[in-house]
Image (cartoon, rainbow, N blue to C red; front, top):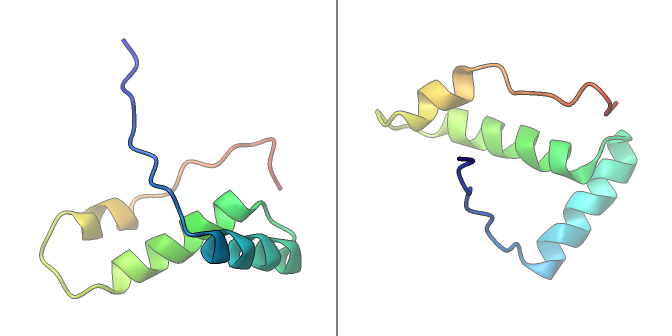
Amino acid sequence: MPRTLYSPRLSNDVVRALYREGQRRRLPMTRVADDLLRQALAATDSDRPVLRLCEEEPVRDLNVA
């Protein structure tokens, strides 16, 4: 049975900023968001497991540039 993951709602201004940054980088905005969040979480000074998650190689869709 597939597990349902939580999908947080982002503020409209954040979505617009991610879209523009994705256009600038020529990447999908979801990939830009993933990269930015991983960088921010990895820089967090914490002993929680979130740091280990950020150290893992992200799963990339091979159909996306």
